[in-house]
Image 1 (tube, rainbow, N blue to C red):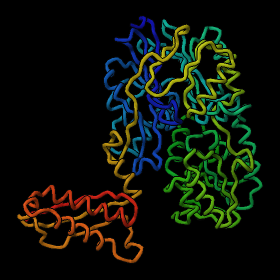
Image 2: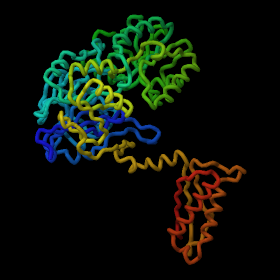
Image 3: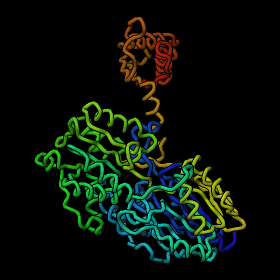
Image 4: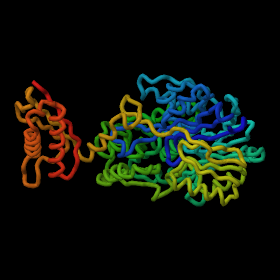
Amino acid sequence: MAAANDIVFLPLGGVGEIGMNLGLYGYGPEDNRSWLIVDCGVSFAGPELPGIDLVLPDIKFLEEEVNNIVGMVITHAHEDHYGGIIHLWPFLKVPVYATAFTAGLLEAKYESEPGSEKVPVTVVKQGERHQIGPFDVEFVAMAHSIPEPCALAIRTPAGLVLHTGDWKIDLTPGVGRAIDLDRLGELGREGVMALVCDSTNAIRDGESPSEADVAVELKKIIKSAKHRVAVTTFASNVARIRAIAEAAAAAGRDVVVVGRSMLRVIDVAGELGYLDGLPSFHDEEAFGYLPRDKTVLLCTGSQGEARAALSRIAAGDHRNIALSKGDMAIFSSRTIPGNEKAVGEVMNNFAKTGVEIVTDRDGLVHVSGHPRRGELEQLYKLLKPKVVVPVHGEPLHLAAHAEFAAAQKVPEVVRGKNGDIIRLVSGSAGIIDEAPSGILVKDGNILDDPEVTGVKERRKLSYAGALVVSLVVDRAGDLLDDPEIAPIGLPDTDDEGEPMEDIISKAVVGAIRSIPKARRKDKDLVGEAARRAARSAVLEVWGKKTLCKVLVTRI
């Protein structure tokens, strides 16, 4: 049995992937640990999960341990770190701790989730310490592409663990506090036993530029523009929003905000003073009367989301906003892997119209919020951890970070995956057990295991369509009418032009007639014979195994 002062880390999401971050710290003996949840994020479904709105960590383990959970701490308000709270907290109802900006965005999120249960939040400030069960948690000011990001210095009798959250070294972040390097150095001198650290840019050398550098470039580009300028960025990047507004003001332009999520962030950031000193933002109704050379549009849709403002503007179907030849669209963002096609479609639509496109290939209009190897090296020198666990990255990033940590002479580097229980105690660090892990999906109003929601069948439907056959038989099992055939997503005819419905109907009738009369009374047997025949007929003509359902009505 583990020692009474054991401390472990258990990721249920965010390790081996970018997104869906949910980590647990456990303190105490194996059979009686207290658990602290760090972050509760979501991912967005790709083509392998058709129709799914969100992907969340499976919280089966948390539900089993709910009486031992002392709280949930949120490092910052990006969707992959806090977006799952509104969906998963009702199953746990544990105390939640977050900064004012995160709490404000969570409050605003209820508007887009009608009927959701409000989550009570204990608001904390960067630099504060809070006792949460046996965990003494200090919220250390970091820098990231959002206000109020925190690392967590977690103290227990087992030792000090630093959980970085998402971070970079930026001494001029645009809004809010800069990364507190002095405090990180003090923690290093106190003695950091284990470091659980962001790996997103661990494959990149050097250091990330500052938000201040982007602000300078945006000011230059917007000032040189001849006509309208549309800028898209992540709605949560308040420093970027401020930089765009300042650039617009310097060029004598007004800012029109287009997109609900951008408006929500501006409301929360404004209440907290992060947008003080800026001219007022306009809503999209102002677009019609502002001069073409005096307008900057601040738009949602940096990832090519179909219904977001920028996509609709590019496609020419926005009710209030349009860009013309000679206008400019600045993509002040990076394209998240998997979104390349959607973003490319937006850019192509603009190109057809003659809109000038500016991306980070053309100028410094975006910087990452994650540390490159040069920044990781500085952090390691400040903290001098004895144990390192790379998190927040795909396998390539985790492997690069583990190799980097070993090169920094860290005594113990532990590569884990979601579900691994990792002991963080120096001298005996490593994977000691495994817990249930996986994903849940938000499918409309349903939150459940993906296979329960019918995703498996939807994947087949997207590839090979579906077929419904309706049969009406008498008590002897003889057909009373021709089969009703309803193909969905199948070819209309075969290569020779014969209708697919006729081909299927002939196969079904033949199969039923081949059943001995005495056995046709078995309704299930008739249905299965018809299903096999219909599916085989489609396979022979098309070469694909369609989903097939047969309905048998006996009269």
